[in-house]
Amino acid sequence: MNYSQLPKEELQQIYDLQKAEYDSFVAQGYSVDIARGKPCNEQLDIAMPMLTGEGLENMPKNYRNYGMLDGIPEMKKLFAQMLGVDASEVIVGGSSSLNLMYDTIQRALQFGILGAKPWNSQPIKFLCPVPGYDRHFAICEHFGIEMISIPMTDEGPNMDLVEQLVANDDAIKAIWCVPKYSNPTGITYSDAVVERLASMKTKAEDFRIFWDNAYVVHDLSDTPDNLANIMEVCARVGNPDRVYQFASTSKVTLAGSGVGCIATSKNNVKDILSHLTIQTISYNKVWQYIHYLFLKDMDNVKAIMAKQREVIKPKFDALVNAFQDAFGSDSDIAKWTNPNGGYFITLDVLDGCAKKVCELCKGAGLTLTAAGAPFPYGIDVNDRTLRIAPTFTSDSDLVVATQILVCCVKLACVQKLLAEKNS
Image (cartoon, rainbow, N blue to C red; front, side, top):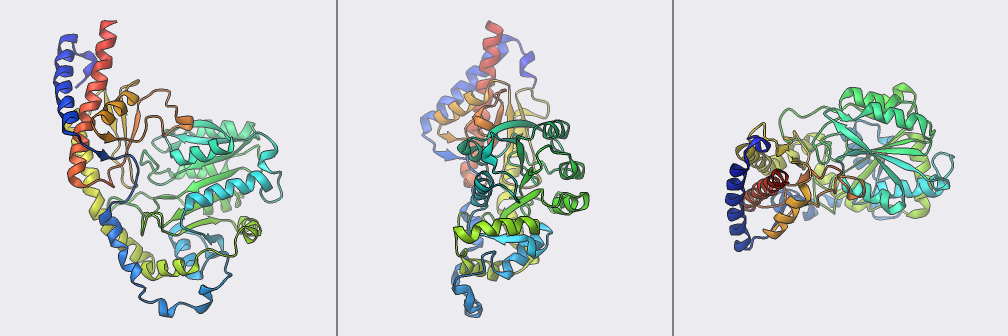
C-alpha cells in the first residue's frame, strides 16, 4: 500500500484501527526484547558439551603455565583456516574480539604503528560505514576520535567517497568494516569493494582497515555469501600491513565466554606482541584448548553452525514473512532486508518516524535498539533506520514482538502523514 497517496479520511480510519490495536497491546503488559544480537538458550545449549572436560587429560602440560603469548598452536591453526590466513599471522586472545579492537586502537593512539607517530599526536578521524555497528562507534566516541559517516551501498561502503576522503586527509587513520553479513544490513562486500579498499591511495601512511569479520561462519542458507580474502588482496597490491582482521567464537560457542583473535601481517603481529608482552603474560590457554577440543576443525565448525542455523533461521523467516504480509513489497512506510547470514534485519520506516516507533514500542512492552544507534553519535539524520535482532527471544515472544512492531510502524507513519495533510 502506498500510504502517502491515501486520502485523509482513509488514513484516519487506519490510524483509529491501529490505535485500538496498540491500546490492547499496552493493556496486556507485554515485556519482549529484540534489541541486541544475542544467541538464544537453544543455541548456547549446543556448546554445553565443551564444559565436560573430556579430553583435557591430553592437554600439553605447558598450557597450564605462563607463556605462548600469541595463543596455542591448535587455535591459531583453526582461526587461520577460518579466516584464510597463515597461522603465523594470528594472535589468539581472550574472550572478546571487541576488546582486541579497543586495545589495538589504544596502542595506536599511545605508541603509533610500526614506528609511525602516535595517533594522539594529532586529531584523528575514522570512516564509519552506515548504518553500522554501534559498539564500533562507541569506541571512537570514547577516545575522542572524529567519525565520518560513509553511506552503505548494496556492495559495501560508497568507495568513491572513501577513496576521495583518504587520498586527501592524513588525519583519516582507519575505516571500520563488518565485511560479511554487515551489522545491521546483512550486506557482504563485493570483490570490487575489497579490491578498492586494499589498493586505494591513502594520505596517511599508517592507515588501517579494521576488518571485523564477526559473521564469517554465520550463514543462514546452504548457499552462503562469498567474501574475498582481503589479506591476500592487500599483499598482492603491495599493502600487506593495511588490515587488522578480528573474529571470535562468541556466537559459535558461548557468548561472552568465547575466544577472540586478531589476524594481520607478520610485521603487525610483531609490533602488537612487543606491546602485549608488557600488558600480559599470556591469555587463557586452558580455555583455548577446551575450545579446540570442541571445535576440532572447520568441518566440525560448519556442522555446529548448521545446528545453530536450524534454531535461528525460522526466526528470520518468520519476521521477514510477517513484514511482507503486513506491508507488501512496495510499501512507502517500510522496507526491510532479508539477510543471507549474520544476526540482524534492518527495517527502514518513513523518514522522521524511527524514534516514534521506538517510543510506541516501549509503551507496548517491546524493547528495540534505540533509533539512531547504527549511526555515529546516535544521530540518524533521516530518523528512519531500525535494527531488529530476532535471535534471542523465544518463538512465541517473537510473534508478539512482530505484531507490536508492525502496529507501531503503521501507527507512527500514518500519524505523521495525517499531520502533514492537516498542516
